[in-house]
Length: 309
Figure: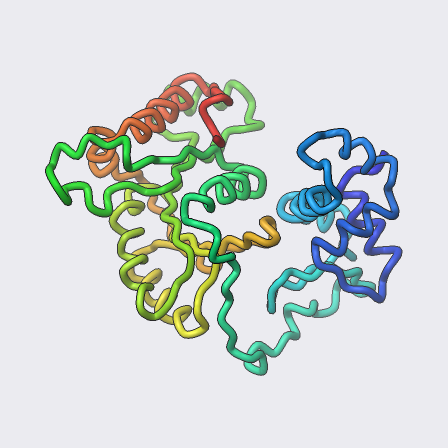
């Protein structure tokens, strides 16, 4: 039975003159690997061909793509313009399509990636799915409706992030090293915080960015997440990010694992626990999140039922 990584490599190798999107590869898998795919079709979640293709396309991206490229240097991708393209590179030591792409000649276009039928709340499980599977994060949703509002009307304005996450750094370490880190004044985790919006425009970009600054700067990494942005706001985002350290992640709702970090966040070496405490005292979800972080720091145990839901 071929793994997804083997499917990616073999399909691209068999079609050296073709370029594929993740969805194109998924359709090829249906033809080339009927036995493997038939097994997946027994899952009722993929009871239609469309759902099956969407899931296979999601499985192409992220870590599987990186593993395929690590296993075979001929597996290549091009990320701009979107969507991501997969192809077989006969000469991997020569410049890739990304290297030779003349971005100055690309037309400036807006990138609306989200159907207007999606609300911000609809995006939360998509983001959690992407972060957990592609970045290896353990995520929790923070519901602002569970706050006490003890500071009165408006007292918690821009206080709560939408999604928070834990990144364990010690997975795979020897237990002696893990115990040593836990007993010393060191952390084996990094904490992430995300503010989610639908679309960034000139009219809202500063408001949304500073909302992310307000509710996510406490973490090691803070991100503003959007499904798309107008072509005239990226420069503003670059400037704001260089000043305040908040990164920008573009969530692709059509091909989830073609989502990308547009601007990497600047790492905050130490968590701002004073700011985190402010959220803990107000919000039950955030209290539970910090409690789970503490359990991991003390024991090295992840309670799987507490994460990614």
